[in-house]
Image 1 (cartoon, helix red, strand yellow):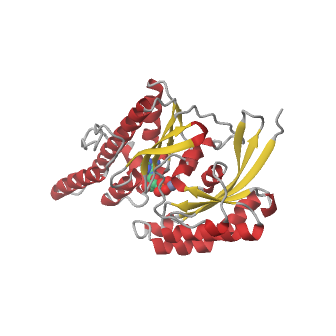
Image 2 (cartoon, protein in one colour):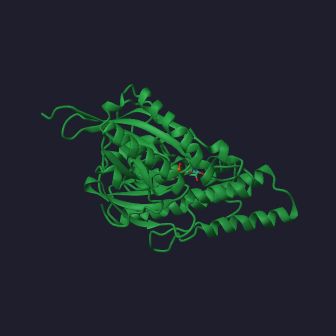
Image 3 (tube, protein in one colour):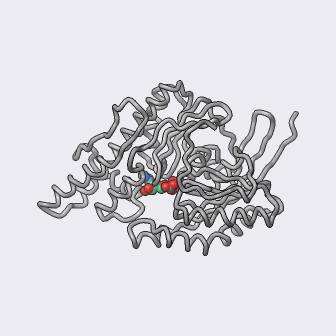
Amino acid sequence: MMKKEKKVILGIETSCDETAAAVVQKISLDRKTTGFQILSNVIISQVRTHKKYGGIVPEVAARKHIKNILPVIDMAIQQAQRKPADLDGIAVTYGPGLITSLLVGVEVARTLSYVWKKPLIGVDHIRAHIFAVLLPHAEEAFSSVNIPFPAVALVVSGGHTELFVIRRKWKVAKIGQTLDDASGEAFDKVAKMLNLGFPGGPVVSQMAEKGDPEKYPFPRPMMYSGNFLFSFSGLKTAVLYTIQKLTAKRTLSQQMKRDICAGFQQAVVDVLTRKTLQAAKCYGARSIILGGGVAANRLLRSTLAKGAADQGVEFFVPDLRLCTDNGAMIAAAGFFEKSVLPIRLTADPQLSREGER
Ligand code: KG4
Ligand code: ZN
């Protein structure tokens, strides 16, 4: 019998507007059972700062990361009741994201790796959103998730909308992406048009719950395009035209706003669900994974779960709080990547993996 093995990784995330660090423990009970435990998960969100501007201001984000990064790391290690010496590695997001934001996390991780003499692991932020699915949901201390491969993964966030096929041993290959706006970005822009604030996803989906999704039928861009590409800028424009037409006559009532949100959300969910289910069919997937900030959307979670069940495919989605950016998913992804020399790791804002790894 294999000896019980424990490994601990510190994950650092600063690609956008959350300064986050977490300590995650991987426990291998035997050859077949490996699981994860979140020992700490600290996030300082800059949402309140960027709300004033209606979107993220890169320069401001970077300054805030610089101010917060060391206290956040310190807190993560303390809450995990570990010492730097206990760490088996330091994982950090090195792309994609805002270059000035990424640089803060990468430089701090490189320095700590030197000083603490710990292996450094560069993590792709988009892939990390997929690995979040392996982490325990809030109440459980330890979870061992077995994903049947091949799997199809949909990552939907503020900057990305991408489809992947994942084969045995976590070989991830991209099969599709958005040609213009990301789905989260579309939520944020619709919220802005309706003066609902930033970020748009949570507030638009909340409004949508009391709206009629059929009142304003919006287009489903590229739904039947026969490939795995997406486009959301046309939908965004359709929402804008509808708002302009309505406001030419009167100011929008709360109910009109709810109906617009519901119609828009339904259109996004329909496209994302159909394409993901198509991809699952096409690649003979045995499971579907949903990840990224927009995966916090309840309608998307339930619609895709139902579609997967109808197709006889297992469905996996991270706990709600682990869908949006966090350090725990970076640490989790770190267990699947090789370490690099600190001198070799550079931030790559355009990082996007085409081939299989
Ligand atoms: O993954 P994430 O935290 O950051 C990026 O990597 O971009 O995703 C943030 C995005 C934002 O666009 C936000 O509006 C969206 O996720 N989002 C949602 C919901 N919660 C967050 N979109 C739709 N419904 C939600 N409930
Ligand atoms: Zn993200």
